[in-house]
Length: 447
Ligand SMILES: Cc1ncc(COP(=O)(O)O)c(C=O)c1O
Image (cartoon, rainbow, N blue to C red):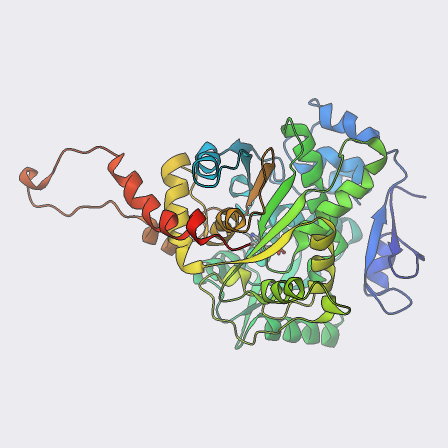
């Protein structure tokens, strides 16, 4: 085997490397496009890479070069992403202890600190840009609700690749502005994300251009699997619960791959319970999961999910109304003993303000759905004593200036000093907790 190889997940057939995969238009001989990437390196080597602080790439996910599908380090296009801090958020631990008698540890994974575009998606973008450079690809297509395309727009610009981006009409304007400034082409499709995906696929086919495969894309999965290695590097204990805002679900697919890749090392004892959280106005996977769970997961449950047309959510990055990956994601969640749940997105600002008040971390709209998922999990008794919970703060608020403006609650307009009372910041604490305490109390627990 060369440095790596792709294998068809359905038939087990070896496909070759990414040159071969791209030449096959990212389709296996049996017509499927689910592939996994394999490496000849012994899994034990991961510990050396985790420990090696002399690596030139120690400040990015390229620390794990030996387990990434790229031949030549010179093709790496990196802005320093994927090596981000894990912080402990004791204010959430205290809430769980005081209100639900649950003694757990709570950490957050700070994707807002990613150097490229400040989201979870920079990891995928560094992998894609480097790989496209290495394989000599000059044109590429992607459909996105916003964040992945913004990251790809920046990184592919650095790789000299022309990127045609298809976004739904509800995509945030500031995201469009950012993509536009990199000089990449944006096609704003009149309709929802499902329609944007459809038009993107037609465009790619019409012109014979490669298209990003979405949540199952091995490029994205390989990049994001490095989260597992990073948690081993940064955390004393591996998380027992992983909470993430859910759109299509690349996160859990990649984490499972990362764990599987190093299973022989015994470094990870078991998969975390995946708790995936959707905004209540675009929650098809949560609806399907709830129904399946209520019916004790009857035969065929993985294929029973609703399709929401033009979902109106205030969190456009999470607006996947047609959850084609549900059979894959729900299967992983079930095997992990996890949950897929809905979060009342009208509480998003409350969560953002609270988090920033306690930690000064300015979380973005999609990240509030993950943090809100923590409170929802408490209500569903899905978090237990001794759990080590890791919440993926997928994005910061910097990327959404409108959102940051809305987060402000403390400006007083005055004419003179007489109108300026002395100030004690603890007065805000009660006010900021009020809505959360009202909603997330043991009195209203739903099992
Ligand atoms: C900040 C953030 N968090 C979470 C997600 C969901 O990611 P996925 O469901 O693909 O794992 C997205 C997707 O766009 C995102 O931008």
